[in-house]
Structure formats: structure tokens, C-alpha cells
Length: 403
Image 1 (cartoon, rainbow, N blue to C red):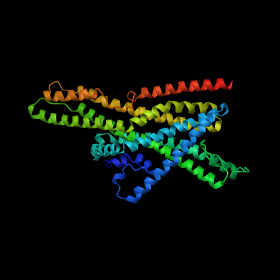
Image 2: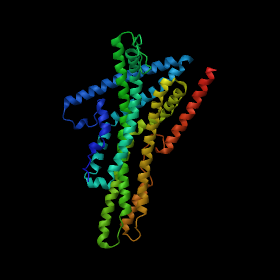
Image 3: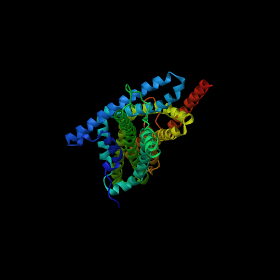
Image 4: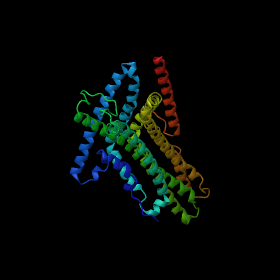
């Protein structure tokens, strides 16, 4: 039997990503004061630089809208602004709910199966394998998008200048941002500005990515607990003999407590992530729309970058909706498992506890955003439908003006 996994190993990926931008979710446990100060400085300076870049993007976008000749440039900046807003507000939500998040992680660690035998019973290896594949694909796409946009201009210019014999090194940027100074006139100014863009893009990608990875890890563990409760209910047959009915009752009471605790943890997830999820879905349709428009109207060189961006956004929305659907299904299954038990000849108190479990499962645990129904595959289809409607409108408007 393999060695037992720890909760720290289970949630390692988002924790490590956050630390690369200076955000330490376990800061309160660290005894190293200087390390905490260095990480905080990295985080604050990084977000200061990032938000200055966002302001520059907004100014560029407004200026580009003033002329029809630059509308395509404006629609190219719009998805980046939307992505930046979501990354910013995810970090704000994390900061506002930091205490709740720490309590949530502590409680998740407390309820995490500790021994190798327990982890096999909970089917942790299978759950973790799927979770890591999802995290790996999403992280690869998200970082591929930010890296492609930020690093491609310098790599292209270097190849043209050093290998193909171009007369000058073209000083271009990956993102269209307005600067109050000439960012390409002097070499040191250009590279300093360029490095600022690269770091800002990486920080946005990690802030956007890591919040969703924490959500995925939380929902994975909750689904694991709900599935375990369902299996225990299905496999356990209550008995009517007075000698054993008390033991049955105690067993079922433990499952009721575990069920209630899992429902409480699912509410923690909603308190922490509901606002960022709301903004995420509100901007996702417009962002996907603008990216799709760029794919149909840009040059071949830019199409590759925007296809990566489009794939990233589609996968991100799909992942959230997939895990939302999984959470609802896993929690609903508990009521079915309780009803399918051989409870006919059981003690009256046992039946009452089963009824409580069934009633609780009628309102399944779910991921929710304010004013939105519980997130599921229906939400994904709605986002895609709205994106296509916006895209068709934008495409028709642009074609009409062009004629």
C-alpha cells in the first residue's frame, strides 16, 4: 500500500503558484518574519505595477475607440482588460475573505483522511489523479497565454535581428498599453518597461489561475467526502435487534455529523469565491466574444496567440462548471443512498436520522454566484450562447461600418 498523502501535498500546486507572486496562504503559520515581509513586498509592488498597466490598457482602449480604423486594436485590448479585472478582483476577494479562507483550509486539513487505509476508502488516489490532470492542463494554458503575449515580441525581434540579419531590433510590446513617455526611444527604458509587462502578465495569470485551483481542490475534497458518505449508507444495513440498534444509531449519527460538516465547508467555498465567480461569468461572455472576433479578423500571426487565449477562457469556464456539477451530483447522491438502504425493519430513531439526511440532500451543495443559479453545465452552455450572440452582433456591426 502506498504511503499516506498529506493535505499540504494535496493542495501544493495552488499554494506554490501563489507564493511565486508573494501571496502566502499559510503566512500565519510561518515563524520567519523577514521572509513574510519579503513576500508581502513582492506582492504589493507586483500588484502596483500590474494595476498601473491596467490603467494604461484602459486609456489605450478608450483612445482606440475614437477612430474606426483602430476599432480592431480596441477589441484586441478588451479581452486583456477583462482578464486583468477578473485577476484583480479574485485577489481582492481573497484579501477580504482571508480569515475565512484560513479557517476553511484548516477545517479541510482537519477532515482530510490521514492514514493510507482511510485514503483508499475515500478513493483519494483516483480523485487526486483527476484533479492534478485538470490543474496541469489549466495551468499550462493560462501560463501559455500570458507567456505568448508577453514574450513573443522580444523573441521574434531577437530572431530577426541576430539570426536573419534585420537592420534594427524592433522594440515592440506584447500588450497594447498607453504610456506617458516614449517607451521605445532608449534601450534601458524599453527593457525596463518590457520587464514590467512580463511580470504584470505573469502575476495576472497566477492570480487568475490560483484562485480557481484552490476552488478545484476544495470541491474535489468535498465530492470525496460526499461520495464516501453515500457508499457508507449504501453498504451499511441497519438491524432491528435491540443489542445492535444502538450501534447502528451511533454509526449513522457519525455520518450525519460528517454530512453537516461537509455542507458547512461548501458554504465556506461560496463565501470566499462567490463574488469573484460573479465577475468571472459576467466578463467571460464578453471576453470570449472579443477573442473570437480577433480570431476571425486578425493576421495569421496574431490568430495563434488569440486561439490560445480563447482556449484558456473556454477551459476555465468549463472547469468551474464541471466541478459545480460534480458537487451538486455528489451531494444529491447521498439522499438516494439513504433511501436505498434496507431500513424497513430498523429502529424508529434510525429511520428519523435517515429522514434528516434525505431532507438535507434535497437542497444539494453547490457553487453559487450572487443572482446566478447554482453553477453547472447549464451555466457553461449559457455563457457560450451569450458569447456567440455578442460575437454575432459585434461582427455584424464591424462589417456594416466597413462597408
